[in-house]
Image 1 (cartoon, rainbow, N blue to C red):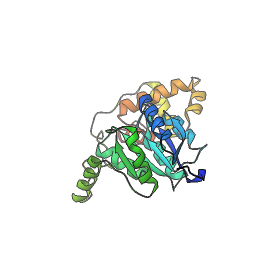
Image 2: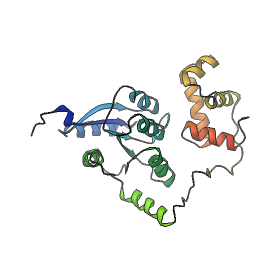
Image 3: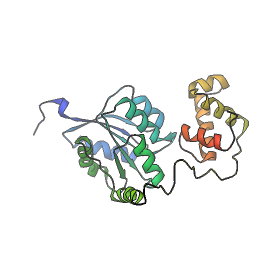
Image 4: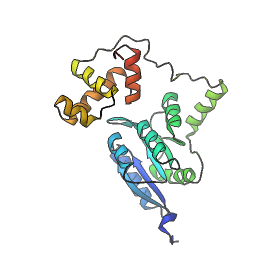
Length: 230
């Protein structure tokens, strides 16, 4: 049956760096007459950029992106599009990622344990007001509340808080200071007279050394280790 109105279609965007998953997802969307795919991006930066140019009904986000955490995309999308259904599609099933995603604005959380074509019904459910969550994740959330809401990995107590102070190079420290002051990657590149790619390389190294996946986590961890004067 053909839809008479384009507006009846569910507008979908995907932020995912796995090319095979991207292609399988695009094929699945093509076979779904009630959906249209408006955007496919493969990095945190491009995902955030897409938010300024499109508006969708359902956004699917992977957490492990090459240049940072998909949680940043979730948070930004939730602020820009309060009515958008945001679903995580990831291999990360640990409690910290789950709770951070839900707190950032995600209303669905699926582990990549099924083919993308099987996600079409989950997208419809999310768009209809449901909260599709993989059974393993739902069990974790239930266990958390059964324990009185006490997380096994409290976000207030970062798991790296008791480890030895991280050693950053002079350039990494400089980039960290600029990040803390709110400068963008392009602005930092200009200030340091290097390319944006070089800045992103420094940022990735900082994230690895601090064992974090977002700017907010990096600043928090750096402060807790005394790496920042302020």
